[in-house]
Amino acid sequence: MPLAAKVFEIRVETSLEEIADKLRDYRVVEEWRGEDREIELVTEVKDLDLKDDRLEGIFSRDKVILVNQRGNRVPVLKTTEARIIFRKVEDLTLLTVVQEKHFANAVASILAHHLYLSYKAVTEARISPEVMQEFHERNPEGTKVIYFDDLDFVDVDKLALYGDSLKNTSLYEEYLRHGKIWYIVFTVAGTNRVMGLTRNCVVTSFTRMPESEFIEYIDKIVVPLILRSKELGK
View 1 (cartoon, rainbow, N blue to C red):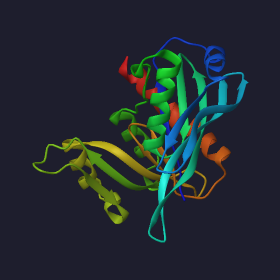
View 2 (tube, one colour):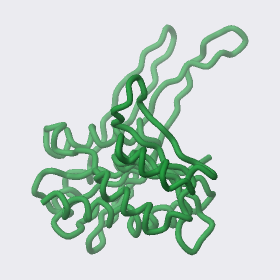
View 3 (cartoon, rainbow, N blue to C red):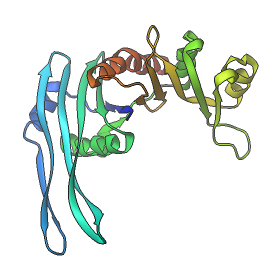
View 4 (cartoon, one colour):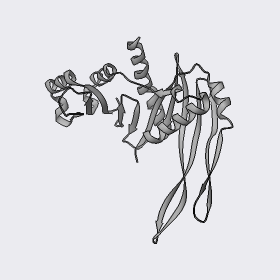
């Protein structure tokens, strides 16, 4: 199964020490009630570790799924965990949630409310279309797929270039005139690792790798693109 993560930006002036203090004892317990049983559901943050410019921990959340067992719908407790990493990078505070995007969005929303009582306090980090274009054009041979959005063609939401079509410079230039790069699948330079990246900082590894290496790639590849976008936007 591919590894996935999403990067968010903390929009409130804060320190990692303050975040750690607020999350250290975070634990919410709810009761799920069925016809003949009750199940305790726990949402918590555990294993916090604060070092220098980063705070890491595990966000854990229970839910009940109903499983068909010989015609009966039986409730089963399922726990989903996500590594969370808060980082101070220049004047930004970034949050990386290592999970698929829907769960990552839920984690960011819960943490925003708990930490700052405002869902607006944590937003998606963004990479500008210009920086996505720069990223592709630095190493075009490494790009496997490009999706374009925000198109001005009638009734066309997205277009893609992949395979031999990527070598067609005129087609690439035409798509750029009519839209913006939304998603790139690329090979990490100097490796055979294949990753995907969207403008709203959803990162996917299509190559099996340790989670620690995946996070390292996010730090080295994605975070500089976020910073570059901020720089161009000033």
